[in-house]
Structure formats: structure tokens, C-alpha cells
Length: 412
Image 1 (cartoon, rainbow, N blue to C red):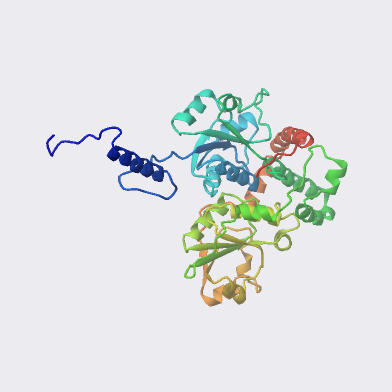
Image 2: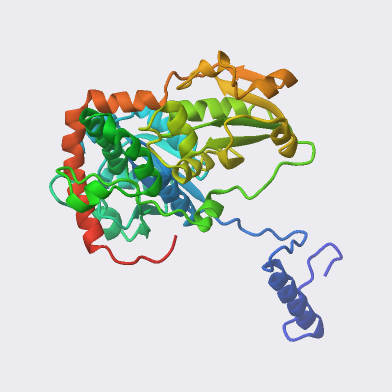
């Protein structure tokens, strides 16, 4: 055999045995985590992609927690946002239009991709598109039933295909509940000033004695959210700023967290390396904006802000006035505020909460990209009071049924 030819080992020879041992050892080593051998390539496993859809109207921390749970079931989360037309046909008019809902969903830090104008019911055609075009492995939904107007299960096809996974519903909040709180504000306001002072306390304590004891025609429930330290940890990034980080500070009520909040937070984050957001207390908001505020309590508002991808950390119960000591404690480089806000009168008052950062030359006003405030959302509800009342009555009936028959679901 010529020297240029490939020599063949004889089966059973000592050299063949050594080659088998060495080859087997190399093959075994190649499958150990963190071990890479020259000339050996491991096939990269395709990421698990999961899909969750929804209206995401009046988006709140319950929606965000559902997306967090869904993302934990895979490597990439694709979210479908239902169109305005589909919502009208199946549930009634949405409070927030599609373009605002797209901003809200895209800003949630657990979302990797967003599909606009997703269908309310997953048809066979759309499901196949998810599996082929979007490479979706599983379709996710909460443990609460999602029924179409004809009473059928909206996720029946996904379940039949064996590509459905369930997560635990976030207790204590729903868009219906939040709209109900605002409708209650309208009813309470019409009764006269004697009842106004009780509303904020009801929101904060998650209890409405009058409604819980006597009931109401609409069955409106005030916040039943029970905050836990574990939930805060789940939403937190768990990381502090670096030693040389440029820290931006922005504070506010962030009540009924909306697209206007998201966009101004995005601009604020672009100015530095770390965005610290101060969330004012219920008492502060009530004192500065009226007894009917806030609609959402402190912990609810904090979770909504924490879920935003542009936010690195929050101060739960931030002071109204920004002091020199606070700026030093948190190493704040710049304090910012938007041009669109509920109350801009602080610039004219003697007790300007931004007086210290202004004097230090570290205050900046940002041009707000959207002219939306919490009052904007409330006005939408008031303007369509009857339509939302009818929608809520229908939805609240199904929610009462869910709570009456619900059983413990592990996880989350």
C-alpha cells in the first residue's frame, strides 16, 4: 500500500482497540456541558418558542405576570395583540386603541416579539401559521376559561393538537375590575362630596364594604390584590447600577399605567445607564390630585412600572420632594420630568418638589411623545359609560362564576 493511501485498521488488532477507546472518550466528552473539543461541532438546539394572545386592554400587572409566566415556559415569547374590531365583536369597545396596546405589550420586558391584529379565536389556519411561519411550539393561556360568544373554548384546537400549556391566573385584578373601579368613581361622585373621601382608602385597602356587603347591580369589586415580597422579586431585575453608571431619576403616580408612561420612560432611559423610578404613595396622590385618586394602589402601580423593560429599579413610596440627601443616597445624575402630566402647577408653587435638583443644575424636562394622562383614560370610560357598564355586567358574571368555583392551582 502506498504511503499516500489511507491505511485501514484490522478489526481486533491492538491499534483498532485503542482507536475505539479514544474515539468513544472524545465523543463522551463532547456531550459534557462547557466542554468543546477541536473538530467536533455540537448541534445547536432550537429555542423553544411560546405564544400568548390577548386584548391587553387597560394593561395592568396581571397581564404582565401572565406574560412573565408564559416566558418561563420557553426561551422566546411571541405575543398576539387582538385587533380593535375583534374586541368590539367579542367583548365590546376597547378602552385603549390598538396602537397604544401595541406600545404597552412591546414594552413588557418578558416579550420578545409582537404580532399585530391577532384573531380573538385561534382558527386552524392561524394556528398552522403560528406553527410554521412563527415556529411556535406551545400556545399559552391562563387557567380561567376563555369562551367565544357561542360558548365554545377559544383554545380548543390548540388543546386538541397537544400544543397547549396553562398558567395560573393572577388573582385580584382584571381589566373589568379596573373599569369597574372607575365606574364606581362616577357613581360615588354623583352621590355628593360626603362619600368622596372614602374611595381612596377603599382602593388602598382592597376592600369596599358597601359593595361587598350589600352587593351592586354591576357587582363591582375594588382591588383584592394581596402584595407579597415574592411577587416583587419576580418582577425585579435584581441588579443595581454599576460604580460609574449614569443614574436617571423620574417620579410620578403612574396610575393606570399607559402608553404615555411607557414612552416617556423610554426617553428617560436613553439619557443614562440606569433608570430609577419613584412611585408616589396613595396618600400623596390623594392629597395632590383629589380623593378619587389613585385608581390603582401603590403596590399595583409599582409592579406595572417594574414590568417595563426601560425601568431598572423603583422606589416604592417615593417622597414628593426630592432632597439633596436622596440625590446623594442614590447617586442620581439627572432628574427628569415630562411635559405632559396631570399637574404641572408645581413649577409655579413655592413648594416645588424639584427645587433642589433645579438648583443643582441636574433637572431636565423631556418633551412627552404622547399626550395621554390617567385623566385621558378615565375620560374615555366616562364618555362611553353605558357601553362599558354593559360590557362589565356581562364580564363580571363570568368572573363571579370563576371565583365561586375556582380551586387551587400550583405554580406561579
